[in-house]
Image 1 (cartoon, rainbow, N blue to C red):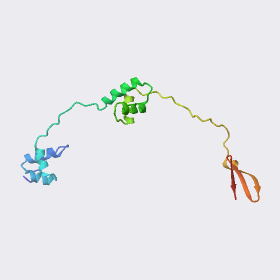
Image 2 (cartoon, helix red, strand yellow):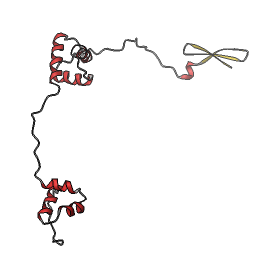
Image 3 (cartoon, helix red, strand yellow):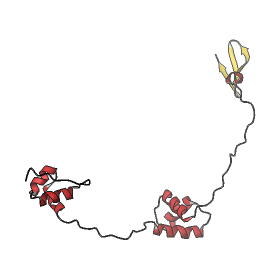
Image 4 (cartoon, rainbow, N blue to C red):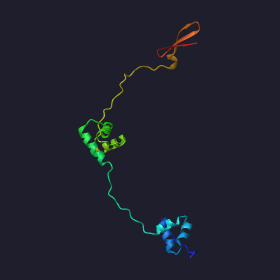
Length: 156
């Protein structure tokens, strides 16, 4: 019995291994010690597995989607951040703004944003080398005055 060789398939899990060894006549405590498993766990592996009851999938976002739809119909110009604030104020729902963005994107309620350009005036002209920018203006009693980018600087 101890010299028997048991052929194992390509996929071996502890349940199938314990069941094969138990059917082969080995005691469960010896199997547990040989495999490094707890004795009570080995006994539980010998019992048929209990199937878990299958529940239908529940949409966790269903309530949030309903409120988003109502708010977007009432305020069509509101973006996802304002809708998130309205969910918190009116509906007492604490929802992350990223979640609101994702749900509004899925439902097609995101507001189109206009792409704005720079509001500053563009300066055109030649960029001077740093040596050309700083040039000496006058020399008075060993003090050198320089003008750098419109700022007067005094160096000793």
